[in-house]
Image (tube, rainbow, N blue to C red; front, side):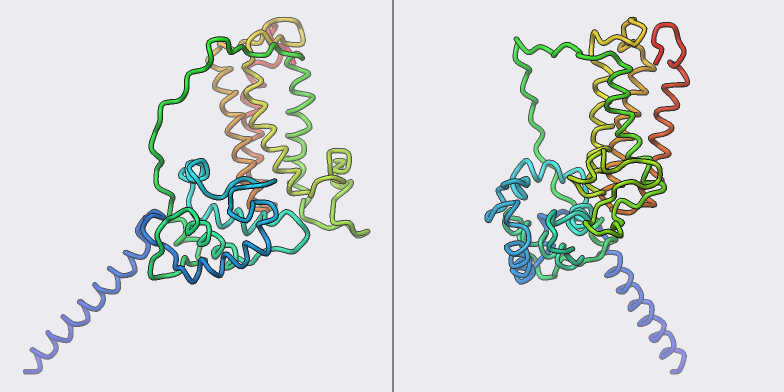
Length: 306
């Protein structure tokens, strides 16, 4: 009789453990926002915060004003490449843009719930949790792929204005320096004198580069975007090197290094959006490598000297 009880006890324990692991594992399974990941009550809380803190820039209906729309096909298409965690963290780390103070992580999560409700994604029976690991498992549905519109027959590229050295010294050099300066200067630090912006620190004049107009972290965002976007300028047909020779835009290595630079700009921007000095500092390794790879092959060559 005792042996039977023991066997039943073991069986019950095993069943309980199996149920526990099934529930735990199921909670971490990937899903999309179309599967009911928030509640209507949570969306209501998010609406109240949104109206008070976000509507001035993004509009009463989330259709956008000075800030972008937070619903619709374009919005969904952009975020289909990222997780809901990325969206919550962007709101938490970088919003609002005014001086009304930071949002809490829970408020940021509730706002996303409201955005999903306005976007006509169904509500569910449980709140969207302000837990990064869980939010990373939730994505937007993959949008329907449509064929890109062909370029107009009369579309032409604008001719280059400057040579390669001028583009690099006028755009890439100052923008890269802003990103590299984060290694030693915290963009979120407050000046002792008190207007909340950095002026000079770490050997780099932040004031000259916009510190009196933009917040420190915003400035790093813009610099990282400049690096990524300026990479395309390296491929402009007809641009010449400082020595007068044409930039080797058709060289496989040149294309490869240009793509690396664009990716480095994207990585720096993504790191900057976390508002974490250490993460931006780490991202500068990728930026440094992309520059070094190109310089190692092309700097000093007779056909393109910078």
